[in-house]
Length: 94
Image 1: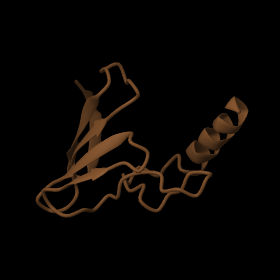
Image 2: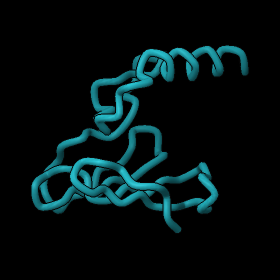
Image 3: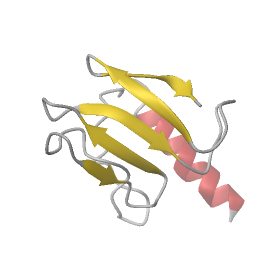
Image 4: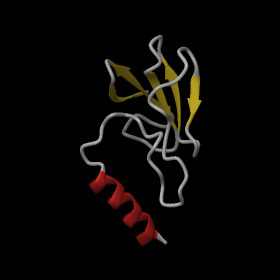
């Protein structure tokens, strides 16, 4: 099972190594489910990650303003947040 998980993770990272647009709405997991939150949303609303890993707040222009991540740790604890600035997701902060 772990080997299948690694293959899935490794394939995704190789295929999307230069894909940092923040829009995971069209990307799919191996089981066909949506991979992540849409990049665009209704201004001032929240989007929940389809697998419960993240909540995303959309700013006044409908692009991400803040992500709150759950269940993993970049050295900032869990949960932690990432602020977005001009379409670029910043490092995790607690």
